[in-house]
Image (cartoon, rainbow, N blue to C red):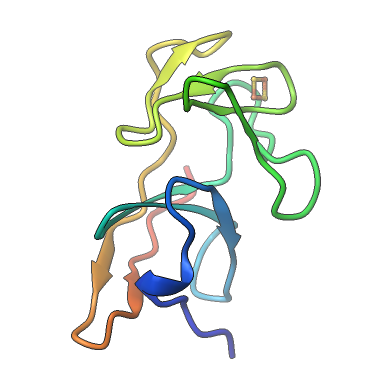
Length: 112
Ligand code: FES
């Protein structure tokens, strides 16, 4: 069984891939300060994963997450595509809670 990461294990504003059997797909975790955003690693453009290699994601110099397939860029706070072929469409959010021990709890959304 996989355990979810702890808040203090996540690098600041660096996308991290996470998967376990409770989730319908791999998840992208991004910590900003004490907050963590999570999205399914499924691009709204053609349904591909955003990463180019296991746990390797592209980021633009100005801090957007970029899909490696066709270059769509996503705001790392809102998950919305701000440029590219799926502009205006958001990644699918995964609700995140942080328990008193600082461990993430992810609530599985529907994949579609
Ligand atoms: S699949 Fe992500 S930009 Fe095309």
